[in-house]
Length: 216
Image 1 (cartoon, rainbow, N blue to C red):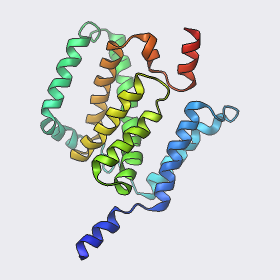
Image 2: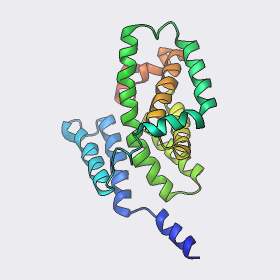
Image 3: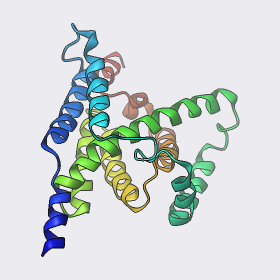
Image 4: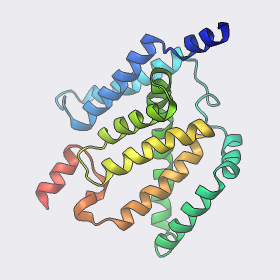
């Protein structure tokens, strides 16, 4: 009984941390949709809240899962997923991957995916794991949150729902942000290559998607 009670206590999230996580999500959505376009400083709000949350949680490079040891481990744990994704990625993009400009954009996008996964896993997924059980239900709710952040793009919303849920489950299996970022780069590239511009709108979201829709 003591172990069970201790597990329950460990699972309960800190209310302040939970409130900060929710505020980060909502302020990020506000920044995407420019609800406060008159106040350009709003972009600093989710950044400041994230730093505050990480400070409260005493987060480090290792606790945010940015180390290389887990990256190496994931290549064995996710061997089949890695091989299938890489094979399809090379098959679809072999004509593009050897251009220097494409490789440069890929490096920049990888850095963005690392940043995105650090935020997503440490703020959204970790908070929902403590709040929702079982873990697959927490992953589904995380996927919904991730998809809503990519509204109203009809290509990105279903894709980010699936990837958001899957990445949460993969992260729970082997906690490495770098590996998830590599997967995200390949999956996003393949989705861009395989969908028409009139639907994916160059992966724009929020008002940028709507402006491009009106222009087209």
